[in-house]
Image (cartoon, rainbow, N blue to C red; front, side):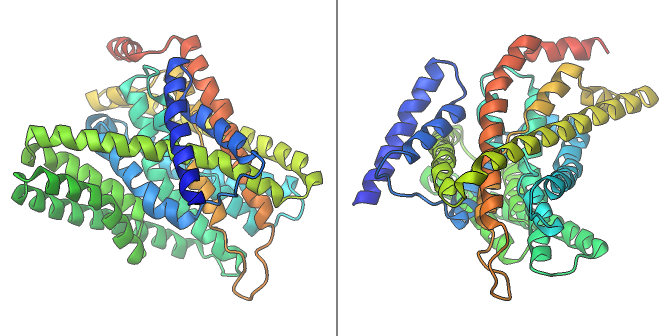
Length: 425
């Protein structure tokens, strides 16, 4: 009964704070995270520890599915080079950058542990990207790049995490084997997503006159895709995203308009509740992880976390602008409409570079670190890695999240800006 009351209290807080955030024009994730931290410090408040399996099985699939379903496929295709660069190359660059920083700065941090920390914090968060950029009036191209990156990079981040944790456990790392496994995980996830998407399309055609069944099938799909892919040891993230894109192509031709409206309304409520709960849960974890750290180490670890955030931001900005110059070079060599549509101005590059918020996936992967290694010894520096991961997530959400609206306003960037830029080329 006590746990039931806590859940109701958190849901009520989430709904109320979301309404307040809308009135004061503050991105609601920031207000919810702050409230979660405050709630966690209430005397007598029971500890609420996030179960990583719940995040990966319950929260992540529907959120990824909804984002992939609603993404602009036209813009996604036009900007695939930028998206793939951020989702793959940048993830591994960030992993390496954080690992090097952690190894040389944080005491008792070995190379495998440093790479585990880097992998945990390597990927941006789809939920944070969509929630914080919503309502800022950013060009559709910029929003699509941010959403597309955060939809795909979870897969590469989680794969890098697997290899890093295996290395901590003593498993040897062979680059060519890891590369083949990475490609296999991605292709396997795509295959399962395509098959399930087509299968659902056939089922929707046969149940199109029964709106309840049709909507229920779409609600079930992300969980089935993720669970099946993970069971077959391929990327569940890619499977969910691929199946959602397939359904977004099939659904307009098979589902009556009234069913689409009903489905959208139901999905909006589900996504709103899941988003809100995620950000409150992130805040609630902070008091818990503080208890696992020696009080004398808290300030130094917070300092290391700020340094990691700075390194991550520099790497991201550098990679975004490097890709920007590469796209310009390709456009000068080959002046085609597709190359022209892929170009970005420096303002949008700055927004993309700044918008590298971390979120619930980073937190869940940190908490998923095993308590013990295969030989029974405790996982080294586990509490330190979790603490740094939580603090980095909070810093990126609050500092970068609050700075993003200010940056957009200062740059006077809005959707018409993109039209002017494209027309001037």
